[in-house]
Length: 552
Image 1 (tube, rainbow, N blue to C red):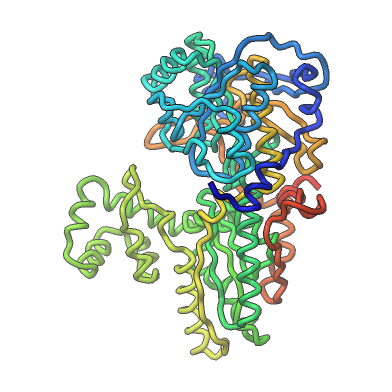
Image 2 (cartoon, helix red, strand yellow):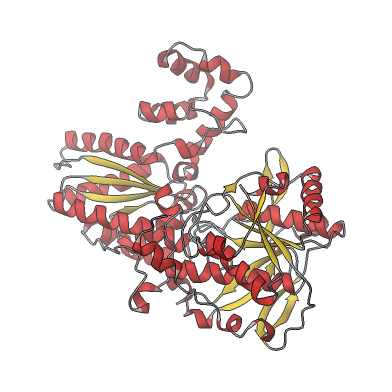
């Protein structure tokens, strides 16, 4: 197989481990901390997880390895959306297994949880693993989004695990996937199967973090990839000087990606969903904020600019959320078929007008027709509007265009406005992992095996102090239940890992807030360039600006 020079070089890269994990397996001891409790709803979470709740956080320290020697057969899955570095989690897990005992085995179950349910797996060996070290993507075994939540599913997994002689299962995924890990761990413990379950924190959206998990893997690489592209567009905008570029980036439930890209590139506008919700900003408020920047820049002769928009922004706008809720009710049950059978958009428009409240229709009616129609595209499996299909970058550019036309009539705006649109999503999910993500992910995998070797279950592999050089990183684990609370899902209360939103009093947002008025008017663009893998550590091993500000 032909491979690129970079791919060949990345195969040969040796990821850096936390200092403690470099001592050799025989010299890694464990130190237990205080008992833990969930972030909220403690009584309910404890009742649902009686066998795995309240366990202590643990840290690996230098000392004699006191774990019981036994042959390990570990299963691993990749779950949810792709994120750069997943292959290195598996590589680190594999290397730790084999370093402890060459007879240990690692089985990769294909297509996520489905592999566990269908007993579809491959046994890894050196040749197999070596072809994926330090590479992006999840193609080593594929991924999937099947939820593990029923007793029948748990029993199926347990039966196949017993058949294959598994001693542990490692689930590499985001908040939903690690919620699956917690519930599976509880089932395995309650039924005395002897099978441990360990999770690893993954998501490019950055919303799986807390005081213990400083970053989810993949966020570093994805945001650097997007920031390179945004920087390229900023350079183009400043060269052509005739377009405003509206750029949508990943982040359905939180705006971490948008904020990090703004900190990296200093665009004229960056919307933060959490601020929109906190201030109860309307579509008109957001439109005017962008239009004000366009007008002020035009007064300086700058008829160009860049605006970053998080994927889920419209869900943070109270009036838009209310509109979506009414549309979900309007098309509930058989009404979807009735709506779809209408002959043309005019008929559908009248159906919508008759079915929405006056307030909701007022919001609907100010939307460009293309966006109106997107609200009535194919529903999600629960019958709801698929917000991710709404082209919010086009929504706001069109609304800004209309607002500027009014201002031109009033004589306050004399510039020219042309818009270009971009969505950066898949471009970042499978990029070659940065040195940071390559190191961090390898450490998470290696560390996951240490948790298995010491007998822990229902734990998340945890590597902290990651804003420092790798030899200062701290390895350990935390009970997944510590991150959980109860939320309403599909008409029922469910235990789930709490998503981490952008903190408006946090240092990253405060830095952005302190500079955005200047960036809105001036051309203060910065150009991060491509991810660097070879060269000075301050260039190649740097963390995200978000992490540097949070921990600096």
